[in-house]
Length: 313
Image (tube, rainbow, N blue to C red; front, side, top):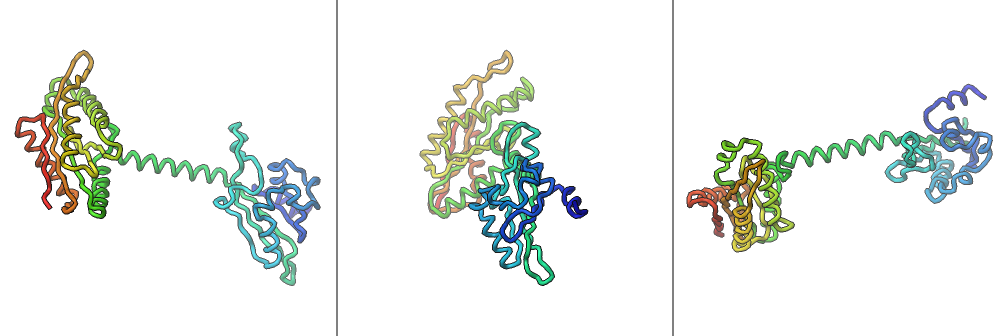
């Protein structure tokens, strides 16, 4: 064996040399190990006889074009996850069979006259790289999701709510459909924390969030605005619909008995609702202020009630 061949045998990539008939002239040790085909079995044979799937994956077509044009060709993982049906080393270790993800490069080998006389096929195992990329993407998606979720209640947080509200207001302006916004405050919540402790208060907040969610339509958005305040975005809700939904939530809370350790707790909520019709196009902060003003009015009027403010066009 030539020193060159020994060197190629030590590479951690697949190396194959093909002649102009696409018959195999060289087959390195990496290819032996991954194909389970000994060099003596493959030399002199057309590569597409050993791997028939290469034909419909356009390998032979691109190989002949490389011979004719003297230009390299590439098979990327994105277009072809793998050309050669080899199991990945990762799958062998985990006893879960999966195909090796590959990048394959066809490089023309030219003589002194510049004619392509052979083709060098380089096979790169990129399974680990692809796996790491997928893991990074999954981690990124999880972090993005976590950044939108209120840690305690599991519903959307204030930042996510504001993004959603701005998006809904854009839709509202474009389609000229009504939009309502409800702000909810738990009445006398401070007394719960002072009497039973903050852990009890956290439990109440979680159960309240679940209770609110049960009364909403599938396309409404619930989020925690801060402390004991919650916000609900109600797309395409008329003042009457918003009133009905919020009144249902208020009644459900009023009837609900919360249990914490040996204590039974009953609570009420106040709700302020702002509304924008097809002819008014408020900013997010403006609509929130209207809802907050309505909530302030509900609390001043004795709490445990819904007050709806209708935005005039």
